[in-house]
Amino acid sequence: MGATISDIAKKAGVSLATVSRVLNSSGYVKEETKNRILKAIKDLNYTPSAIARGLSKNEINIIGVIVPDITNSYFGEIIKGISEIAERHNLNIVLFNTDDKLEKELRALNVIKEQRLMGVIMTPIFGGDEFNSVYFNTIENLSIPIVLVATDIKHSTFNGVFVDNIKGGFDATSLLIREGHKKISIITGLLSSERAVHELIGYKKALTLNNLCVEENFIFKGDYKLETGYELTKKILSMEDGPTAVVICSNMMTMGSIKAVMEENKKIPDDLAIVGFNKLEVLDMVGINITYVEDSPIDLGRTAMNMLNEKIEGKEKNEVKRIRISPTIILKGSEKSKIKNK
Image (tube, helix red, strand yellow):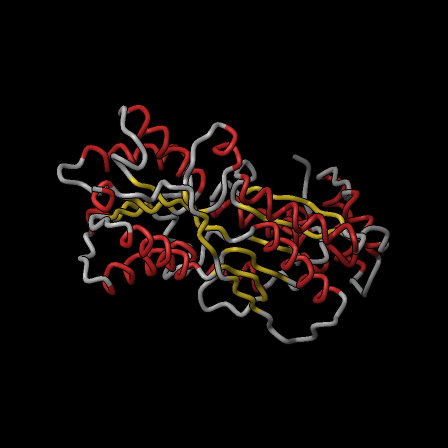
């Protein structure tokens, strides 16, 4: 990887803004400081990127899109919705994948700031009850329009389009209870995110309102990965007098769960009923029917991009706009209970 503006600033002992003024010939810089920066540029063999050159000349319009897992079809649908609206407004997209890693998200945010992109749409991986000053300061100091999509950051005032995940967790669990299940497990998402915390709140709320105990050993902390869904479902199936049903808070973990059930020569829903989150088209293709909570990710992407464009064009001024979409449940039969059917 070549040198960056940050490298130049560090070597010359100046701020990023000062380096930017020299690179773009904008604003006053002392001759001595300018020469020091030019020497650092030469020593580091720095070449400005096409993005930075284009933006400085207003020749191209680029936004950043940050997602935690580009291999997940859910985020693919969000990106599709963003792209659809971006094209209408002659905006180009630079995509960043974080693999659910905080350091990768911070790196992406720093690149977006350095390249002076016009705005960013992001699904953050951090934002639950914990607090990370470096993370929050990085986001707040971007100085460009920001729109959050699908996942909120607790206590933030950024524009965003989200899902009512408390309702999602509540509805999924309530469905299983209505089917006659009394021992219901949950495989959560990353509990560092508000999304996962809210889904867990909804799960607990449904149990409590139906006079069922919240069994802490029925709560499994996941991370949205297929492998985790597989491993945790194996644990659920091995429990003596264990759960008869499970709420799984991501489509990839649902895939892993199905694999585990099949390996154990068990059946869905006879041996383990499942309600997942988000559609997986591949399951329909192979004839595996899994009931899931649907929140229309393509609409999330479209709404987020429209929101960002309003910010970029100055139509929204300083008003904070936060939209929350209500999810629905798509019934496929995997929620059924042998108890009810007897």
